[in-house]
Image 1 (cartoon, rainbow, N blue to C red):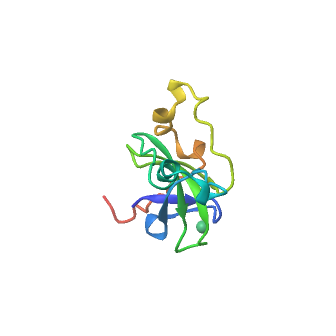
Image 2 (image 1 turned 90 degrees about the horizontal axis):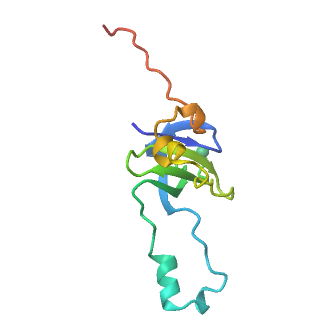
Image 3 (image 1 turned 45 degrees about the vertical axis):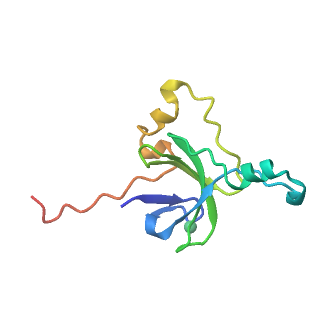
Amino acid sequence: MLLIHCPYCEEERPELEFRNAGEAHIARSTDIAAESDEDFEKFFFIRSNPKGVIFERWRHIHGCARFFNAARDTITDRFLLTYKAGEPKPDISKLSSEHGPAAWANRPPDQLNVKPKAKRSTKGEA
Ligand SMILES: [Zn+2]
């Protein structure tokens, strides 16, 4: 089961406790009635949908119920990091290809603001 780190509860919880709330960092107009149809279409419907790292809003619906943001790799479905709503989008452009988004997927959890999974007991297993 996929575990997601809630930055408010500061613990990893099963994905069933969370709900995706779409792409993060979408700028909302202060006067939406003044928007052109094209600009409204971009705001309301057009999403980046990348193959790779995406920044998303998530809600810990069966926990603290708060919204937070996450950087997730759409190829591996691995969460690279989570951060509180209102915090700035992490700058991944400064990372070289060696340390770029693809390399993030190979970093150990302690370098990703994600706590490692608890080890299961092997008691009773051969
Ligand atoms: Zn929470």
